[in-house]
Image (cartoon, rainbow, N blue to C red; front, side):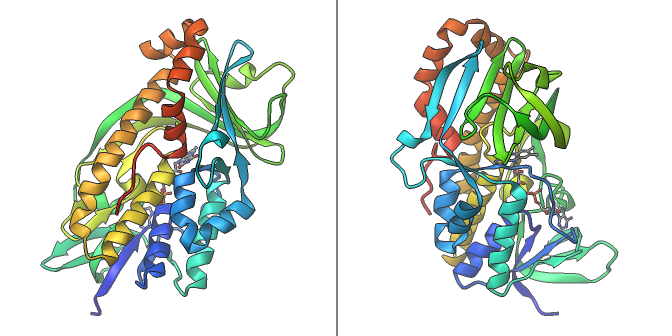
Length: 362
Ligand SMILES: Cc1cc2nc3c(=O)[nH]c(=O)nc-3n(C[C@H](O)[C@H](O)[C@H](O)COP(=O)(O)OP(=O)(O)OC[C@H]3O[C@@H](n4cnc5c(N)ncnc54)[C@H](O)[C@@H]3O)c2cc1C
């Protein structure tokens, strides 16, 4: 049996970015995926400047910029007025905006790039079991008795990671019971279509951003939230509707022997701040750099504190917009001080959304 050097489980954004970063550094990974085709879901639409910077050398950033739309500000509304305008364009960085692009497009572009470099995703392969035996990792697919051997395995197989489950690794955290709703739908809405908008309501908040053409994403934890869109809004066809719960969980060890974890396989949290996919691509970058530098023993210590810190911020912000949280109620019911509170937190919030709330030194 020929041993593979490095195998990537899962071809979501984290796995694809890992393959791309490794290949850019002269490493030929094997990447497999259970889906026969890419997911068509729009899911992550916010690509942050940190990700654009990390991907720049691979050619992905140029293609993202040609394909996506720039969002230069995030407005916070209360009682029909903008109380804070969080203007990203004032930031002295190369990409002072969020790039709005559906996850389907991000994955397509990343996969096209690895294909052009001679790597294809081995599709229709569902990981079933993983174990470490001496210096090698053995893994097997569903409905197949044969084990494959690899020196290193990068588990990028998402929140339900079979890699993680097969090794019985804990994924501890908090489960929130309140339901969140999401619509991608046609809107004719009297707000700036090139900026994002958060509407603070008495019972929670809703987030509204234009995805493309006249299709907008509306997301929040408020019942009947479309009723709270600004006066004069007309709703049209719904192209995707979903409801979901939120959990905040993080893996204890980002490394288990020669098996490493990144993206949703290692950490999941609410979508506030648009960090999930972006953090996964960061994991991919750090892992790849350490891999080529023969420094994999640093991976856990480099990623765990960063992810813990970001998750603390996400938990705080999620609490603020949740309908019944004490912090959220305080903030919304003291609307006269909202601008002050937000202005005080503006730089913090801006760096958080732009993914610049920590350094990456590899
Ligand atoms: C509504 C919504 C909005 C979001 N908005 C944002 C945003 O704006 N910005 C942002 O950064 N993040 C956002 N996220 C989060 C983002 O979608 C995830 O963090 C991201 O998809 C994680 O990428 P990943 O590659 O780690 O995992 P995944 O995308 O889950 O990819 C894992 C891959 O592994 C495959 N797989 C799973 N099990 C197996 C197996 N046993 N064998 C082989 N393959 C397997 C899956 O089919 C999948 O292709 C959003 C999420 C949702 C749901």
